[in-house]
Length: 110
Image (cartoon, rainbow, N blue to C red):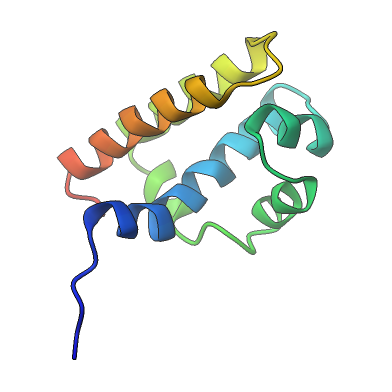
C-alpha cells in the first residue's frame, strides 16, 4: 500500500537539507564563519555543518543553487543570519524557510 506524502513532509525531507547546506556554505565560505559559529547561528550542530559541507546531506543542492530566485532567497537568509546579533534566530530561520518553501513550491521544483 502506497501512502501519499504531504508537501510539507517532502519539503522537510528532500529540500530543507539542501537549503540548510547552502545557507551553511554561505556562512562559512562567504561570511567567514567557523563551522561552530555557523551551526550556532543556524540552531544546528557543528557535525551537521560538516556533513553539509562534505556533501553528505542535502542531495538537492545543485537543483536549488541552479535556480536564481531560490538561491537568491537562500543568500538573503544567510546574510540575515550573518548580520544578526541575536542568540536565538528561530523566528528568522522559520520566516526565511517559509519564503524559500513558497518559492520552491510555486515553481514546482519539489
